[in-house]
Length: 261
Image 1 (cartoon, rainbow, N blue to C red):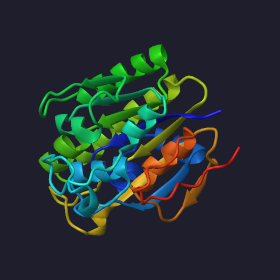
Image 2: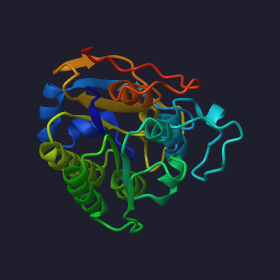
Image 3: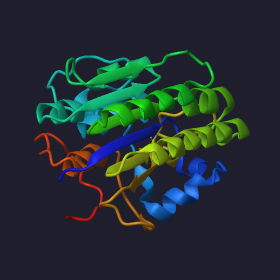
Image 4: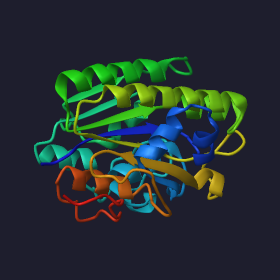
């Protein structure tokens, strides 16, 4: 039987930010997950290009999005949500940055909720609570939860690895813990980021910008296993495999390690 998957993405969360944020749930996740702490994102390490690469499993030079402004693809690639929906899977997006609306094509999401309060506090908490209610009521096959405060309020406003940045990462992990503990049986949860950051910005090929964490916990993932490697392009492939959906022919990623049935 296919798995059901929740993908939580914390915008701008560096691996060392995750480890140093001080939330005890980080240790719980590491003990119960297969963990990649040196995974790589794509160049440019900018939010929308990175998300497009996550959902389409190719580099920005292939999907064509190199800034935070979306433009229709010249040579369209079928994205993760479109492919899952075409195979009868119920998909949902819960997010607080409006530009992510173009990650899937129209009429492929069962539910989509945007809570957009520019630079306002507590949007991560609000969107997490809404996602929890939806999961419990609808039990979707795939749900994407985007938490954006770490990038905006933490990194850009106060600097990556600043005290306030770490506090906002801590709150994102608290949101993740609340969701994790509410999940019905049989769900896999993947926690990741789109990029890191340094100073008050990102977008370069510096390790601080390019390195992201990926933590996978669920019935098919080995507990307490830390592995090298990993790419943001591997996530769509992994989710498709867990949901027993074939890959789009253009996808370039490789499935992250999980146990066969």
